[in-house]
Image (cartoon, rainbow over all chains, first blue to last red; front, side, top):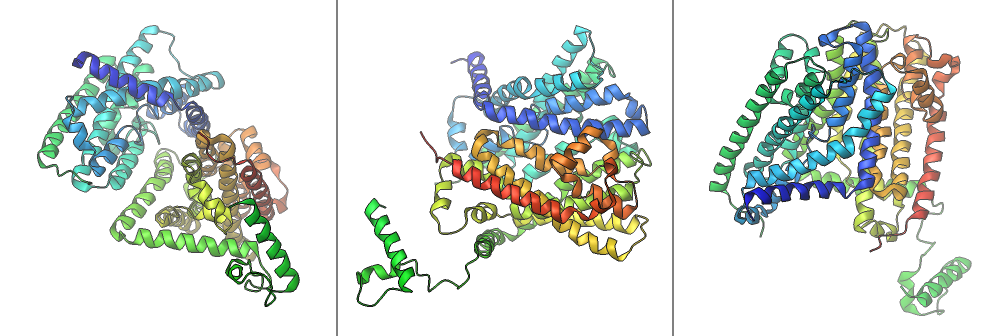
Length: 266
Length: 314
C-alpha cells in the first residue's frame, strides 16, 4: 500500500474507532454543554464589569466560550488523544512492533489523531456550538469566507495539538511512566490554550508570553479568525511555524529514542 | 454452587439460629466450618459499621500500594493540586481585570470557592473513584465484588482509593483559609459552629451525588461522562457567586439539585449577604437536613441500580 493510501486509511480508522461509542459521544456533548453554560454566565458577569475586556464585546466572549467547548475534545486541550495509547505501547514494549512496520511512526500516529479530531469536531463539537448560538446572543459571522478561513485554521491547530502530545508521549521512552507528563500536558493545556480565560484577556507580560506559546495556535487563533479579530494569513503563519517546529522536534526526539530504545516488557 | 447445596446451607443456618449453635452430635461434622455462625458475629450487627470497616480495609490496601512508589505519589498529589488549582487561577485572572464579580470581592469569592472545593475534595477522596464502576461492569469484574461477603457500595467506593486527591483538598483548604482571613465578617458563635457543619454536610451532598452518579451507570453504561456534568460541573458552578447565574439556574440548584446548600446559602449567612432567591433565615442551618435527604435518595437510587444489574453479556 502506498503512503498516499496508507495514512488516509489510518485516519479513517481513527475516525471510525471514536465513532463507535455513540452513547459516550452523546454524554460528552451533554457535559460540554453544561460546562459551556456555566462558563458563559461567568464570562457575562466579567464582561458586565469590564466591557471590551481583551478587545471582545459580550457576544464575542460568548462565542469564544462555545468555540472552546466545541474544540475541547477535538484539540484534546487537556490531553487524552492518541498519546495515551502511544505511551502505553512504549511502556509495555509493543512499540517495537510499530517500529518494524513499513510506515513512519510519527505520520502513523498523526494520521490516527487527525481521524479522531475530525470525528470529535463533528460528533462532539457541532451540537454544543449550535446550542450556544440558539440560546445566547453570539457573534457568528454570516460571511462564508470567515467560516472557510476558520476551517482552514483548524487544520494547523490540530497538528500543533498533536505535536505537543507526541513529544509528551515520546518522553515515556526515558521516563517509563507517562502519568506526570500527562498531568503537565493537562495543566499547561488548560491554562495556556485559553480555556480558563481568552488569552487576549490575560494581563500584562503574562499575556504576552502565553500569546507567543504554541498553545495559542490551538483555540485562540481559530477563534480570532472566526471573530474577525486577526488577519487569517497572520494566524496561519503563526500556527504553521509552531506546527513545523513541533513536528521537527518530534522527529529529532523520535530518532534519539529509537537509537537508544530498550524494549520493555517480555 | 448447586441448588441442593444452597438449600441445605440455608436450612442449616435456620437450624443453628433456632438452636443457638450446632447441637453436638447432629449433622455432619464437616459442615461445621461453613456455618454462618451467628454466635461468632457481634451481638448487634450493623451493616453500616461493616461497610465502614470494609471501606477502611480496601482503602488501606490502595494506600499501601500507592506508598510503594513514594516519589510518584508525592508528584501526582502535587500535580492534582496544580490541576484543581487552575479553577482558582481563573478566578484570580478575572479579578486581575476587575474589582468585583456580580458585586462580590475576591476574598468573598475565595470563601465560597473554599467551602465548595473543600467539601467536594472530601467527597472526591472518599467516593470519587466510583466512575471506575462503568469499566468494572464492562469487563465483568463487578461480579467479583457481588459475591464477596461485604457491602457492595463500600467496595465500589473504596475501589482505586486515591490518596493523591489530598492534593485537591490541600489546595481547597488553602483558598478557604485565604478567604477566611481576608473577608470582613462579624464572627458569632453560631457562625463559627456552622463552618464545620457546612463542610461535612457539603461533603455528604457531593458523596450522595457521586453515589447517584454510580447508580446511574447501571442504566447509562457508556454514557458515564454525564455524571461529570453534575459533580465537577456542580463544584465549578458553586465557585462563583449565585448572582452570576440566571434565576432559573439558581432555582434548579436550590430546589431540584440542592447544591446551593453546600456554600451559597450558608456562605451568604456568614458574610451577611442577602440569600439567593430570598430564602428564609433558617435556610442557612438546613445543610445537615438537606445532606441527610440527599444521602437517603442516593441510597435508594443505588439499591435500585444494583437490582437492575444483569452482568456482562456477549
